[in-house]
Image (cartoon, rainbow, N blue to C red; front, side, top):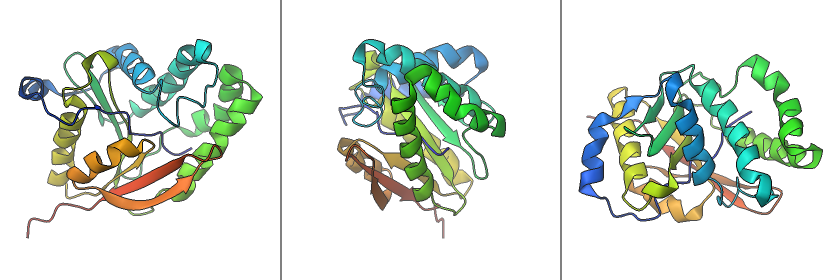
Length: 221
C-alpha cells in the first residue's frame, strides 16, 4: 500500500508568530503520543475531499477513520520520522527513503482489516485508491510525506505549514528529495510556496483529482 494524503493543513496561510515560535518544541513522536496523533488525524481528515467520503456513513466515520489512522500511525512509528508539536496540535508523518508504510505482515492483513472496519464495498474502494497512489509513486529516493494534519481546534495559525518547513529544513540538511500527494487543491499553492512543484495527477473512482508533488534536493552550490 502506498500513501495517505498529506493535504489537511491550516486553512489560513497567515502564520501566527507566537505559534511558530512554539515549534522550537517540535519532537519525534513516541508511542505515548499515538492516541493524540490519531485524534488529530481523525478530526483533520473528517471532511477531506478524498479521505472523508471513503467512510461514507458520517455517523460512523470518526470511529472507522480512527482505526484506519491508528494502523498507519503506529506502523510509521518504526521510523524516527513522525514529528509532533508540543501538544500534538500538528503532526507530520514521513516515510524515509527505502521505507514502507506498512510491514509485510500488516500489508498481508490490510484487506481483511478494511473489510472488518468498513465493509466489503468501502474496503474495495479504499484498496482501489491505494493502488492508484502506488502506481503514481516515484521510484527516485525521497522522503515521503504520508500525512500532515493540524487539529481542528488549532487551525488558522499556520502551524501545519510551519511544521512542514521545519521538517523540510531537516531533509535539506540531508540533501534529499521530498514527495507528497495533495487531495485538497486548496493546499497546492501552499506546498508550492515551500519548494514543491506538480509532479503529476490521477483520478480516483469518485472522480476526485489527486495532485502529486515533488521537491528536489536542496542545492548549496
